Image (cartoon, rainbow over all chains, first blue to last red; front, side, top):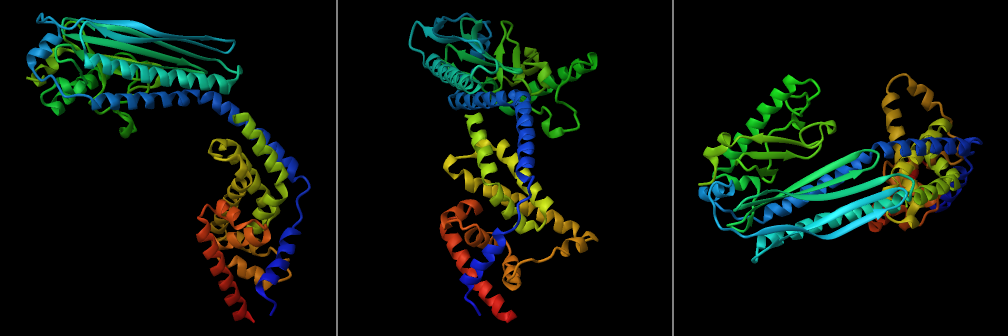
Length: 298
Length: 159
C-alpha cells in the first residue's frame, strides 16, 4: 500500500482538476453587483438604526449618572425643591463654554456645550459638567467620523442645544437636547436635576422613600395616560397592551429622564422608540404630584 | 473605508473564484450547488465587511465563509435527501481515481475533513487552516495528526 501522504498528493490532483464553470465568474459578478445595491439601499434605510447606537450612549451616560447619588432624603428638601419653601441656595448659571460649528456641502453641525457655573463650589455642578462634556464629545466624534465616512455623498447634521428648564431656590434642571439628521432623524434629551441645598445630582428613584412603590405609582399613572390618549386618538400609539408583551412599557427606570415643573409635578421623559414608535418622537407625561406624594422621601 | 474594503473583497473573490468553487464543490459534488455556495458566501462577505479584522487575512476569511456556506447547504440537502431526492444525489459519480481514500476523507466528519481538505488539497499552511476553521493552531495540528491516523486505519480495514 502506498503511503498515505503520497495518496493524498495524488488525490489533490483529482481535487484540483474539477472543472470550473465557464460562466461562474460572470455569475458571481452579477450576484455581487446585486448584493452591493441591496447593501447600499439597506444602509440608507438603516441610518435610523445607526442612530440607535447614540441611544445606547445615552444609556451609558444615564448609568454613569446613576452611580453618583446618595440622596437628599427629606420631605422638606423635596418640598423646597418644588419651590414651596424659600431657601437661600447656591446660585447656578448655565453658560456656553464651547461651540462647535461645521459646514460643508454634505454636513453641518451646530453644537453648544454648556457648563454650570456657581457662586460657590458645587460637586453636583462639576459632575454634570463632566457628563455633559463627555456626552457631547462622543456625539461630535461620531459626527466627525460620519462626515469622513460619507465623504460628501450623503447628508448628515448634528445639533446640540441646552436650556435651563427649572430654576428655583433649591432645584435646577438643565435640559440637553441633541438631534442627528441623516436619511432619518433622531432626537435625544437628557435632564440633569440638581438638588441645590444637598448639592446632589438627583435621579428619579431618589425622590421616593420607597423607591419601588414610587416608581410603580408613577408608571401606572403613565400607562393610564397612554391608554386614554390611544383611545381618544387613533394616530397615537404606545408600546402597551401589544401583541409583543416583552417590548411593552412596564415601568420607568430608576434613572428615567425627568424634571419637576414649578408646581412640583413630575414630568417623565422617554427617548424615541423607548415607549412608542419612532413617529411619536420624544414623549413626555406629566404626573400630578398627588399621585406620588405619599411615596416621597420623608 | 467601506468602499475600499468592499472593493478589496470583491477583487479577492473574483481572483480566488476557482479555489473557492472547488472547495464548495468538494462538499457538494454538484455544479449549481457549488456556485450557489460561492455566490451566497460572496454576498455575506460583502455585507459583513465590518467583521474583517485584518485585510491581510481576507483570503482565509473568504474561505471560511464559503466553507460554512457549503456545509450549510450540504446539511440542508441531507435533511431533504431523507425523502426521494436521495436517489438523485447519490447517483453523483465518484470520479476520483483513489476512490477508497476519497471516501475515507469524506467519512472523517467535520472539522477534520475540512482540515485535511484545506491542508492537502488547497495546500494552505497550518496557520491558514487554523484561521479558516477558526481554531487554535495547536488544536488544528493535533486534529490533523489524528485524522491521518484515522485515515490509515480506515484504509487498512478495507484492504
